[in-house]
Image (cartoon, rainbow, N blue to C red; front, side, top):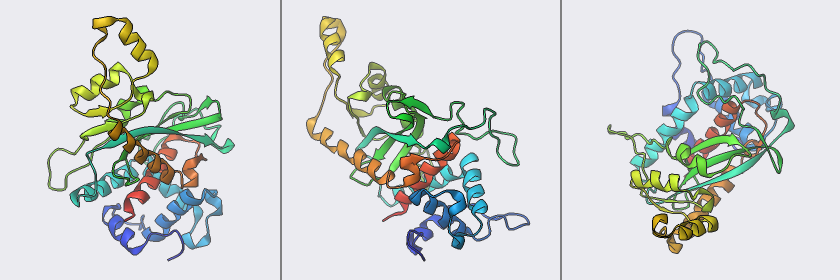
Length: 295
């Protein structure tokens, strides 16, 4: 076992959720060696062609990551690992924090073909495909943005995330970030989708977001922006009541900041090298899986 490879304990948690080899041909031969190459590339950010020979052929590693990103295999593995953690009581549902982080796009990530990609051997398109490839121009140049919901108690683990262009705002993405939270229950029943409390900065302050959280019965701590506060006071009694805000609970928002720092420890996440949005979504998912596999 080399530096950065999955430990025996991490592999024991991951192996039961990997796809099984079916039929002839030995499609998933050398599972552990190939899968160790994928987090190695995400952690170091090296080009796929420069992978060390101990992981086998670089194209085998690259193609497996691309296919599993296209057909949703990485997402199913992430939900299965989250379900195991929830069954062991390792998910803190009392507080979930939302935030966003910008990722500078490398010049190699631009220039994708305008035709929509297709899944090898299937007729459909990747579930996470975007026509804009989640790339946009912001102050920092060509960037993309990761909107995420982080688990509480400083666990530094992602519950759900969305990839958007870099110039998109945060407030319209609160609902798309919370909707993918679906942690299955091993004993059966509806998956866990609703935290008890939500924390976010003033970028997520809007009447639409607060109405959505009230309908789902999710308590929230989101500071009100100055212009929204002035507009509410100017309207008088028709402007509604002041929003509640707990300073003590808001201090726990640093938990999502630590989650972002842990996520950007993977260089292929901090700097985007993937042309296609669905492949970069798989790259972030692999990084999230690695964070969940840690003790």
